[in-house]
Length: 128
Image 1 (cartoon, rainbow, N blue to C red):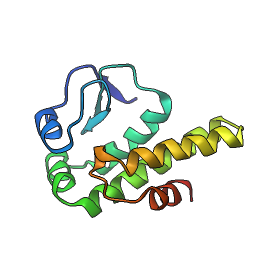
Image 2: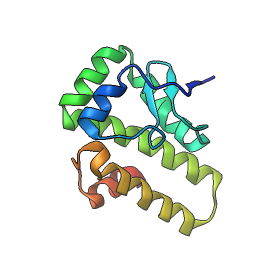
Image 3: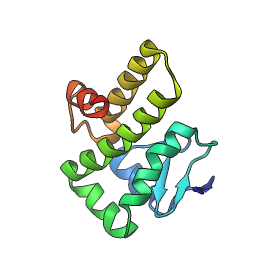
């Protein structure tokens, strides 16, 4: 069972400073807990569960995530793939699945992650 909290995560101030995130717009995982202002959708839980597995040592993981853009993108691609696969398993509308992949690729290639990957590379990495 995934733990969730409506409190801000321990690293919230750092995330605001580095990525300009706003409370309510993002879900953040620290260790075994997802932090979000709102209830977390099942597809996002699939994404965040990957981050939980990646974070054997949350402090160390986040320190590397802040500084190493290649690491950040690798970690996010793995999580976005799981999110996309969840939607693909639970939705048989090919057009809706394509649009969802487009949304995920826009997120991954956008400012939240520091614009570290192009849209087309993000789309290919998530949907392959």
